[in-house]
Amino acid sequence: MLWNILFLSVLFFLAFIARFIFSPLMPVIESEMGISHAQAGTLFLVMSIGFFVGQVFSGFLSSRVNHRGSLALSTLGIGVALLSINLISTFWILRLVMIFLGLAAGLHLPSAMSTITAMVERKEWGKAMALHQTAPPLSLVLGPFLIIWMLDLLSWRGILTGIGGIAFITGILFLCFGRCGEFPGDQPGPAQLKKLISCRSFWIMVVLFALAMCGTIGIYTMLPLFLVSERGFDADQANNLLGLSRVTGLFMPFVAGWFIGRIGEKRFIFIIMVLSGFSTIMLGYLSGSVLIYIIFIQPAILGCYFTAGFAALARIVQPHLRSIAASFTTPTAFLIGGGLFPAALGYMGQAYSFGLGISLTGIFMILFSPLVFFLYLIEQMEEGC
Image 1 (cartoon, rainbow, N blue to C red):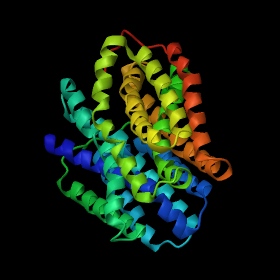
Image 2 (cartoon, rainbow, N blue to C red):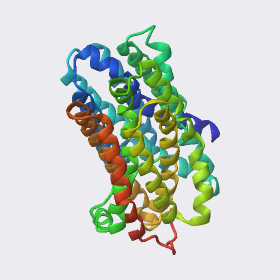
Image 3 (tube, helix red, strand yellow):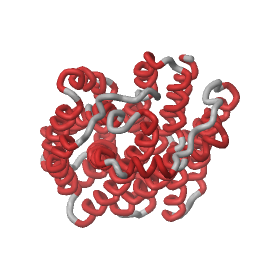
Image 4 (cartoon, one colour):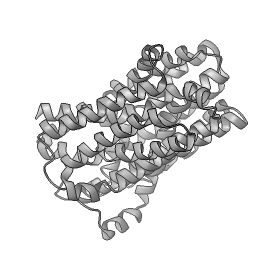
């Protein structure tokens, strides 16, 4: 069982680093392809659109090829997408590849969650999920350092091709040796969807998750461009700060869990959103050595949100709707925070300044933070999973 969870964690790591390795590479890609900040931002937008489609329709695929097949296709698709980048010559084709990359990556999480909860006893879910969820922060930490180390040896295309080759081989190995997920997924029905979208708390969670995505993934994608073009850092300095500042993501969720048990999800989310808002405003406004401190403080605070956010998300609907709520909340929020926001921030960087766009994000976090008190969290859950 541990072997299978580790295997799934490796697949998740590849799905994450394949998408966000583009952030530390973006200054180099901009220079070689002659694109603007706004055009760079649209790459993350089209990738998030593909990711949204992949997650929403993952149930239709897994119901036909089982979760194991869906997980394998996800990793193989990521490999094919990155391997093809070495062949492209125009920015428009790169956008198409990014859509396919997002689509393939979006297939992983729903099938992984279903597979883990099926093969692990309920009392061990927390440990298994925690192991699987170390993949995103680990990829955000290692990605920038990988670029610093490899960019002197390979072109940005060569680096992406190498990651693509590893992903493709790993997908083949999973097909040969992976022994989990041999059961079909569930297709969301119209009645379930209608019940979900009529739930006020669902839309509140979408807004809160979107703001959290803007402050974490959205800023992560454009931070190197901001530091290099507006704050005078060189590319290696920016990538070092980008990677080191995400180390806190490996342990802050456990800190959040301790506080949630004592003050509850609502109050904790409110405090985190307000503090994150102020730190995000400072991130966009400050410069010099003080900015370096904020680069570390802002993701450490906001990284606490997701533990509380997923805990609250699990309580806004009954268990039989929980997976559908997660399947629609996170991709919708990612489309906004990881797609539309980087595109808008890229435009702000081109027309005005990145700093102004980042500070405005912090203001919105503070303004919308009281929405959490309008959540209805269910106290008495029905039997089910």
